Length: 284
Length: 253
Image: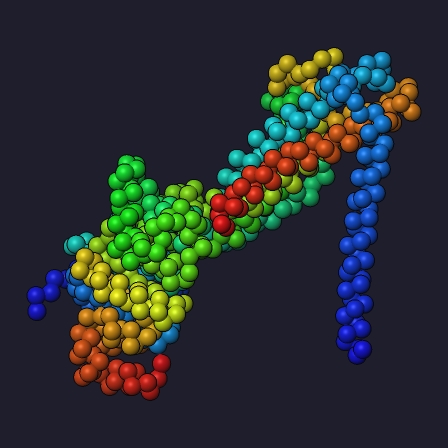
């Protein structure tokens, strides 16, 4: 074998090794959480509130809470983020101001999540008077995932060929008709990818909801969007840092972690289903 | 000759930033005739016809001077309603650009955005447009298939059908055969000859033989100037301008 071929073989092997290491870590995490989590998972665990100082019963209120917070965040951030993306990509000329806006939005994505938590406390909990509630928590998480949704949507819109827009405009469609009937349907799969990633982020964040939505223990379920809620990530945090039965609590924490992963998977699956359906319509 | 003027171009200039790419063009486009615009690449042919439906509005930092009259109205005026202009002046592009929708939806699109809601009427117009674009026989059994499944030539005829469904007065063809094989090209050319009974047609082409085959009038554009304009027969046989003769005989371009 000549030198170039040997170099190529080594190169391929190194790349394969990188993939292997990544997958390995992912596998270990999944295995670890699944094995430990499954020990406590039962029908009761999924459907009952906690009892006896968090050592018995289930975590149903936390599951419900996380579902509400995540859906609330997406409901808030998706329309707003999409509108921003449409404005930035379709309605403004590509100039320095738009670039500054874009850079600002990307920087927002890099702000530590605890900062969003403090912001949510100051604005939603105190200033707007929503209190510690699902509403405050959803809005805070919504703002947290907003930059991701804007960037993903904008990239999706930018990837639509100009020729589609020209074809539509040339037929006497207005700009908005063109966006709504041609550009948006074609970019939906890219937008949904952004939403899927955001769902994982919103469901898993702990810091933004500590001050704005979450309680460690509540009797019963939330009554309205102005109620405090339990949430899985915060419940895990609580189980590992408070209470008097660390051993049982640790087991329950793994159970919560497993449910959280499963929940994210489930919500993402719905989004993936819509994305695939859309792709079939659009690409035969 | 008993030609009716459909569009009148008067002292038209066009600028990309400070660069003047079209220079003081004046010419008449006749109703129910095919007018070809020929010239070497980069001479401003496409830019020229994209002014007829204000497609250049999409490009930043451009400016037009002079006028183009359609039905007594200057379409380059700030007050022109661009949306209704584009319903009167349709366009078929260089590369076939069907929407990623079904064949039917591609054609009905132009009607739907014009607020036509009667399904029966839409179906009738779609069928007629497909027949007029000589595509009906090939696709009638799979009208709900995705348009992207069609061949390049079929896609281009679909784009023509899409344009016909809106019933414009003028149809602009911007090098419609540039990406097609000879057989598809032949079909499109036959179609254009057929369509001029009902429409006024302006076609940009870099293919001189094509201009000779399909057009009644030919305009030769060179470096943004209208060098010569007249009946195709005269321009191709006895050109008055020496540059036209040189271009036609292949000395440059």
